[in-house]
Length: 298
Length: 315
Image 1 (tube, rainbow over the protein chains, first blue to last red):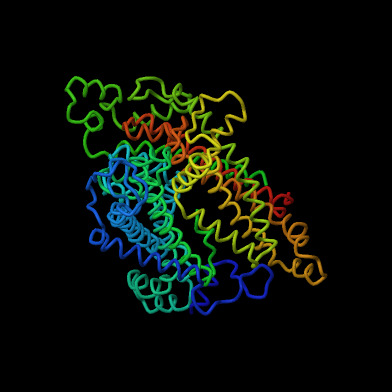
Image 2 (cartoon, each protein chain N blue to C red; image 1 turned 135 degrees about the vertical axis):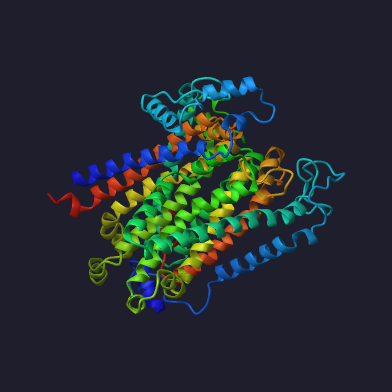
């Protein structure tokens, strides 16, 4: 079953032996994906327990000077008002990753609901939903987010809502395409002939077969959500100080760069580690299921 | 071919119109009174009434939309709330600056990305290919401000090669301009070239799966010649398409880079307008960026149509 779905989801599966194709299926995940999984695990643990292991409190101003360099007291130095960078990164993991996760989950709930509905419902409903999402996809994501934030103001709820709804367009496209592929397969025809309802077909026939490609899409959207949450916070339009989001920390400490302080680089590095790691896992997953990551970038 | 292109142009205009509706609707999603929200709690009844009048809030939404769209079509973008001056006047310089940044980025990023993609395709499944693939994956994954701050620390602070801040007004010569824009251009180029390299590699390798390439391999054509002479001509269509797409992706990067380097461009203006909740200015900027985006996507499709010989030669 797996093989058939892979072939229909990707127009040109990479056959082994043909020039330019990737080597055949590996036994397990590639080295990069293993390292990525380890980093993601650490990030999750920090997100859960970060405040417990942080040497200082999130908003504790230390007697040390602002932009103190790395040292024994403050491993990653201090920020623009003398707060410990390492502690703030440990606190900020929960904020940045949590918000991104919430946005991604919102995107998936909304996107898969409309995607599977569009695939199972009458053509007119499909056309209406598809055209609406086409319009959303034809505005640069960042511009749509900026317009909504300008109207609604900055809050964490707006941040999660706007990112989740924008990315639900990408999830919609993929889940609809997957469901369309699966829908015409024999077992769905059989269920339909048996007289099963739309809901049953979606939940019992389409969903189990779509879950693996959707998992790699989930990873990809999570990366984009982390970039969007931290990016908008960096612009001053997301998480607001004094909360220690990773994007906010980059914004706060930018002036320190002129003195060579790594205060802005450290939180940016934390984001980069997490996003690269997730993408390494997704890349490995999709190379084994025949879908190139570049295809999903739009 | 012409009917297809005309259809695509028509679709582009339709999309642009729908986008204008969506962007305008952005102001209408406010639950309460727009004037109240913009002015905050300290607003006096007089200032509220004046702002309502200025925004024509007493008129129905459809009338305001008509006015707004009509204004845009005739080149009148409205009046900025924060500075009380004509938006067209504020935007023109900013627009040129952003266009300069984007063109310099394209000039550098696209050829380098193309070269890397070709290199990865010629040496597919070797160490060179894997290095380029992982490098481009990492570049696509990291936030723009990570690369920007790393470049600033390395090139401006530690090595002292270039200034850390892009003051476009203070240049005297072309070389000085390039020096002060080096880090912003480098940051933006990385995103473009990584995307370009991945897509070029994919397009060439896709052609490499054709039977005629297999024939060429069997005739003993060396790998480099095979890719450049046999595969590349048929991959050019998708690659030209990708070039337009990777430029469209430049927009989000521009926003971060312009803010980071205090570059006086349109994207920085947009972010400032959002902070000040200057809705007419936000709408005008969002419309310009969206129009550029739609134009690039349309160009990508039209080039793909023109590059396809089956469509081109069909009478």
